[in-house]
Length: 155
Image 1 (cartoon, one colour):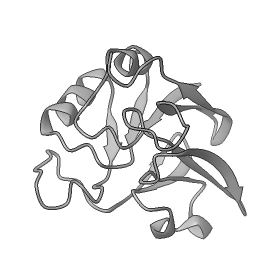
Image 2: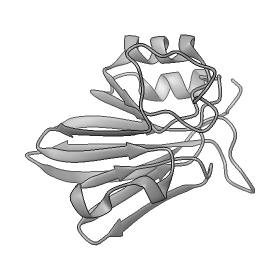
Image 3: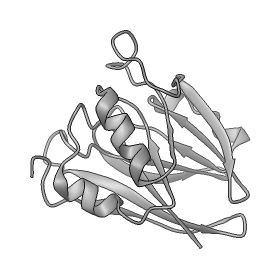
Image 4: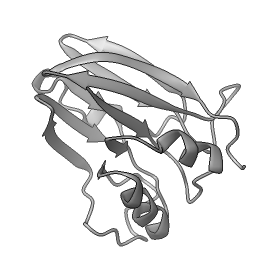
């Protein structure tokens, strides 16, 4: 079984509580608005990372390897699509869609596609708290997916 940790909208901050949660991940997915080349490099020291550009990344940051607005890939027999915006996900063509932007966590099924928005790890909106999502996959199936509440966005 493989563990995928899903984050979004970190906006230049990787808190200690987030980094603690990410330790041990087999794959990290970042759904955009990193706003920090150093954070992109740091995440890659923890696990392989699949990511996309968010609206705050588009013109100011140079990530290596380069990021696009839509990232489609296969991992452990499942087809994933990652986009900062939910409306840009090809939900009819993939098993798992990952998005961000709203800073509000949500997990929902749309047809045969599981759509995951992990919320914001650093700047949640409204009454939300900092969060990420954790998914376990095995043999081409999603075994589980849960939201993980982070202790703090700042510490």
